[in-house]
Image 1 (cartoon, rainbow, N blue to C red):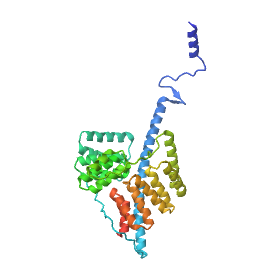
Image 2: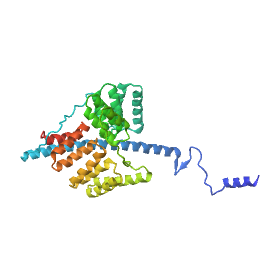
Image 3: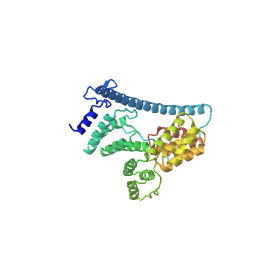
Length: 369
């Protein structure tokens, strides 16, 4: 045997080298590999159940918050009427009646979160139905997909596309408006909704959707082409920084700052929240959500003029953001500018006809409650 073979043999039999576990019966910390695998799978299943439970609790909380807002508005009105105080009347500006819900629309108010595998299966079935142009099947599958992930704009857009091809225009319009409410800068939602409104002869609303979408997404050339086809002027191109940081370290810092500001707001520390959101808006001025949150923090401190300015900066970035219009209306109402508040509520309701809060505020201002 050569010296090299002796050296290799000595290395393999060295007592300092720990032997490798071999075979399925190998153990780690007293547990076999199979037992560890089973435990990991059990933990993953428990995590999925907790995610589903948390999503259901969030949906229930949102429903309770809507009920509280509705009852609080009624209580304020009844209290003022009982005290003999007349409600402020504002001039009716472009009064919009809330359209009736499509008869074919299923109840999607309660989310039914599902596992990732179940969501992917349903989404793939819906995509297959769309690719085969089986529009009835796609419309039937869409509610299950949406209940799994109700805050996903792409699912609502696909729902609208399938409904439009199936001939249910009212359902398609509802789906497109909902997608736009979830993401006011979604170019696809603006394109499909504007096209549908144009086909219905609502040219002014279609041009508003195309123009607002182009402000939020200047790269969406299809929206610029739609406006050119309607002989409507397009807004100027905006050269602005990306809304969110792209580098890994910058993303980590952005999330940390956002979490700190959100925690301060949830704790009711509005001065601290406003300071943190102010820093974030200076670092990332193109992020619409930050301007809206800054407006909330300022409004809660009674700084109504600053809150109004923050909401208007958000609308300069996303003119179709119905949430920003709604809260701008709240700030204007607190400032006593009722006519302007009513116009803001009308804008919120026009951009999302299912906006119950905007409709409630309009009824209060009009004296219907």
